Length: 321
Image 1 (cartoon, helix red, strand yellow):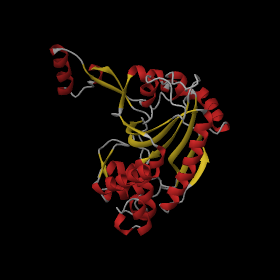
Image 2 (cartoon, rainbow, N blue to C red):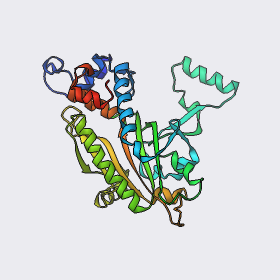
Image 3 (cartoon, one colour):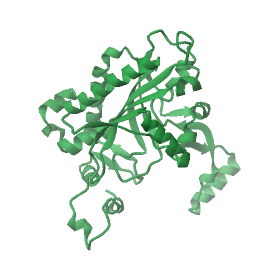
């Protein structure tokens, strides 16, 4: 473990806080080897035990959504610059975006790069943007794909998608990772179809959380829109009740963490990617998102670090892990 990281994880104050306080949740996870320190805040390896719980959650989400007749799509955790710009993500969340850069020079440029390394100088200005951006949310790659197919069927469409996602939020809270997995069911269709879809999944999300014997609640929420104008947008999102989150206490001494989200995008993505309804209108979209790592952490927090000791009903809900 990184002693510097562990020291930072504790609140200041007291002559010897390391001796006076019990381990934080993050320290316990690292000590048990469930998360693996990489030296970068919010970037962790995962153990076989951690991944086994994640696999159980994913299998459960598949069972719960079996009646949705969803098309399964999987994408790498990156999208092209053009689609990223079309999404308007930078207008709302520039602070979270991550771009991929690479060395694109010649032999002379390579020699300059090596000289920088030899002298222990900054070499990152030798990198150029590749035109590829880290995926900020699992559903983003599906909209341009669906838009190119033509009008939706009369009953609309549901897509099952999962991806690693990136958000630039370096943090010592274990639930706030820079790279994490989202599993989503995305609904595209009429406004009435999206509202019914979201209500169904809010009920299912609560039922699933209770089956896992976790202290869950659902509340209206907003996304972290950037800047002064972002506050207006966030207030509007809350007023219109476009976003709800399933909350579970996880982090030491912090408010409950959003582990699932239930979102209604209205016609935002439908208009951007020209996703049409069968009658010629613009499709509305909505999604339910499951934070895989956050749910694993919630289970470890409330049931202990050894899944073999968890309540039998919880283990059975996860497929007998």
